[in-house]
Structure formats: C-alpha cells, structure tokens
Length: 370
View (cartoon, rainbow, N blue to C red):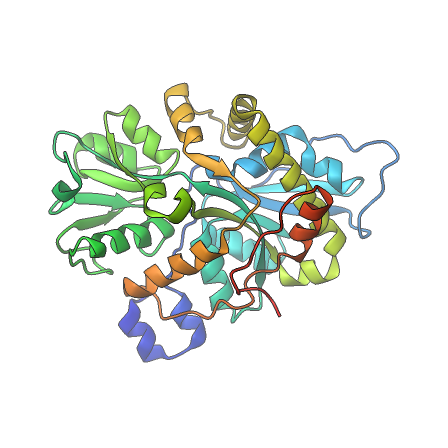
C-alpha cells in the first residue's frame, strides 16, 4: 500500500495525496478481469450510436453492482445502444478498473466511491466523471457472538476490513474514533486491531478464529452470518435517511466529451434497469445471481443471497453529499490529505434521462463540473 499521511506530506505532490484512499472498491468477489462480450441480440434495423462499433462497460461480479448485472443479463444495455455492441469486462478490484478506464480498455464503469475519489484526485481531476448512482447500503459489522455481545465489546478485538484505506476500512476507522478508541491508521494497531483481509479470504479467517468480526460489504457479510456470525451493526444506521453511496457510475472524460449519445444510452438503460429491479425484487435477485454465475462460475446460495439482497438499495441518485462525507472520514482517519472534489460529478445526462422519464433530478452537492 502507499505510504501514510506523513509520507504524503513529505512528497508534497497533488498526485501523491490521493494514493492512500482505497485501493479496492466495495467488494471484490468475481472473476479476474476478462472481456465478456454481450450475447444480447441487436434489434433488426437498429443503428449505431455516435458511429461506435461498441461501448465497453466494466463492473464487478458483486451484488452491489446489481444494476450492471441485471442490465447485462436482460439485455437492457444492448437495447439502448442499438447496433453498437455492448461489451463487458468484469473486475475484482477498483485499481484495475480505473487503470482500464484510463487506458481506454473500458469506457464506462460501475465502481465504489473510494476508487472514484482516488482515480479523480490522482489524475488532478482529468480522467473521470461520476455520471450517476447505482446502489446504497450493503455494508455490515458482523461479529462472533460468543466473543462480542455488544458494541462496546468490539474494543480489544480483531476486526477485518477489506484493505487499508478502502471504503469499509475508512468507515470502520471513523466509527472506532467516534467511540473514543485510538487506532493507528497504517498499522491497524490500537484499541481495536484492524486486520486488512481480502473479502474472499475473510469467511475462512472468521472460521479459523483469526478474526473476531469484520466490517464488510455484501455478500461477504452474509457469508459470515451463514458461518454463525451475528450482525452487530448495519452501516445504514449511521447515515441520514439510512442512505450512503456504495456504487457509482463513472465514465472517462474523453469518452463523455466525444460520445455523449452513447453515454446517455447507457444511463437510460441504467435508469430502466433500476426501475425494473425495484418493481420486481425477487425476479431481479434471481436475474442478478444468474449473471453472477455467468461471470464467476458460481451462484450465491440462498442463505447468502437473500439477506445480502435485502440490504442493498439500487438508486439513480449518486448520493453526492455522502461521497464528500466519506472523503472527510478518510481525512479525519489520517489516510488522506484533504482532496479537491469539485468537478467529480457531471449529472447533466442523467438528469436529462430522469426528466424524460418523469423522474426527479438528482443533486451533485456542489461538486459538479463547471
């Protein structure tokens, strides 16, 4: 991982101050990054958008990316793109998706808030824009009920987070600080031992007893519950209206400038998908799981899928104020120099799509592109 805050100050560069913030997105289940071209049929007589042969879409094989999973499986992206082929690439981690966006390997991606902040600040605001929201919630503190019976019992225990400086790591460090517990952000040592553990390994670490609990996203949280863990805290309860961003939609600024119609088509598909998911939650859950199986080779069992799905809310709103708060938490935790996020959002096309659907426009919390 990058050096901590003191090292960043020594370097004194704008690019460096962004480095500590998250490396992984919310969760990293799924296959290694791979090209997964859509098999959805192109409607007869349809035309290419912006003259493009294809639009390359990236996402994680993870339930918090339900919009992309369902839109892929049901062919909504392809429907809106017409004769322009929707192509997909599946990722395990935020850095690799940001790298793919920077290199042009993908054009649009579904990704967690911390990778978006990191990618934006690291490039001095030149590589991406957040153009829409996708999901809220889906993060829990799950503990061994024999060792931890109340929130105060977390003190002195070993709690896993996905990675130093990732979204959940920042959230847990911030929560621990609010309890009055001192923890060194780099080493994770202190009143609570923060054990940075890959989400795919966390259930085994819990079973072996090497951790006492974990602050993790879905489906890892529900995997721990299936192993006998207990949900001690749902992160939704810490946020106003129980909402906080867990997945955003990003686009390269170059692609947004050169192909706005294609971007609008993808956003239209996203809005349509979210509307269908909210109207058909059970069918949507099965559809998302079917795409997860196609992407990773393994579907989630019902005892993991069902509770995980209930804790995630799909939304078109990027919940911009909560992104800014998450960045502030990282600064307070000592993992990030105060970033400049003005310009990270461009919600013009999303609000155009929402207006056409009779929806309510969403707000960028003053962080929109000028």
